[in-house]
Image (cartoon, rainbow, N blue to C red; front, side, top):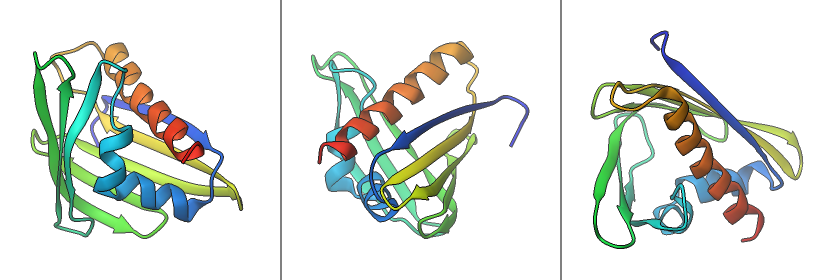
Length: 139
């Protein structure tokens, strides 16, 4: 990864296997993948294997804007690590660490894009991870 890495993390009060399943299953991704209540994820597909593709549509609920977050998996290690290349060439790594039987630490490092300030990107990705934490702990 380049020098412009942004790091986020969260501890989720759920077993590792549940965290992995809910993070990677399209039927769950569409329910947690948004940074704020005025956004949603109306579509998700995920072929979770090395060389597999993913695509998640992120959209404003009022219909004014949408974009696809998509890429290809470089590494998939069950219950441990996912590394992927986004379609714009940036790289990201997601790590899953079982801290206890019912607590999982997730760490994400991703290369910043150049259009938006790094602080905004960090806040946006963290808000999505926070949404995942809330969904997982209440599901």
